[in-house]
Amino acid sequence: MLSRRELLLLRAMYQQRTVTAAAHSIHMTQPAASALLKDMETRLGFALFSRENRRLHLTSQGRALIPEVLNALSGMESVDRLASDIRRGASDRLSVGAVAVASSMLLPQALLTVRRAYPGITFTVRAGSGLEIIEMAVDHRIDLGIVIGSAAPNERVRKEPLAAVSLFAILHPQHPQAGAEVLTLAEVAALGLIALSPALPAGRATQQAFEHNGLDYRPLMEVAQSFTACELAGEQLGVAVVESLGARYAQRMGLVARHLLTMEDSALSLVSPRDRPLEGPGQCLREALRAAVGGLLPAN
Image 1 (cartoon, rainbow, N blue to C red):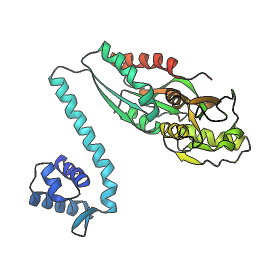
Image 2 (cartoon, one colour; image 1 turned 60 degrees about the vertical axis):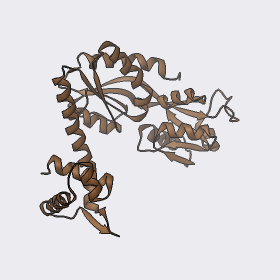
Image 3 (cartoon, rainbow, N blue to C red; image 1 turned 30 degrees about the vertical axis):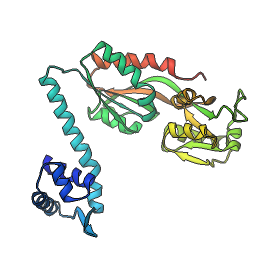
């Protein structure tokens, strides 16, 4: 097992790239840091770094450790902050997880509502995919999460729908088809599709809708974020297809959003640990999110 000091050194090496800089950043001497790295490699049974052109580079084994090192330290630091809050008497703390588009479009106003009700509260906001947010709820790393998708949650997670989700076509207001009240998938395909990755629920639904309608799924561009798709459509590089929250973001940018279809097997939902009921700030956030959804989602 690696100690906290060793984890800190690995993170510093990842960030600073040299033993001297890494050691200085965590208040160690360079000889002590070198000795500690060598001891870690001996105990782990593999090399963490290789030397190239007088510089150290992470080996493939070392790179494989880094995500877990960062997660472990993040968890430790979160515990430290919570302990500090409790010592100061500020015990109200809320951990929230959200898929990227929800964290930008839904959370800010909802968190403001909670802050007004609980002035001394502190927040931790974590981002991730829908499945990652569900795992955070399983592990009690979050009190409440916002996901988009149809994946059945772990039996240790409570899931409740917030709203149905639709796909929208996003166009620049000067696009020749911007004045059309209705757009079909075939028209979108002909205009140049900017699609979300099929790894995302909306991207997968887009691909399935094309295939169901006998259309070739050949996007001009495939991106990982609704925001990026909307920005590309705003540059008139094609027509983006995004989910409801992404469409609302597009409208804020002054773009045109046209409803394409409802995602029948996906929804915007809240998830939380089943064995820990929402109380106080968590319940307040839940109600604030329900209120926020109604004013944010575009009309179908």
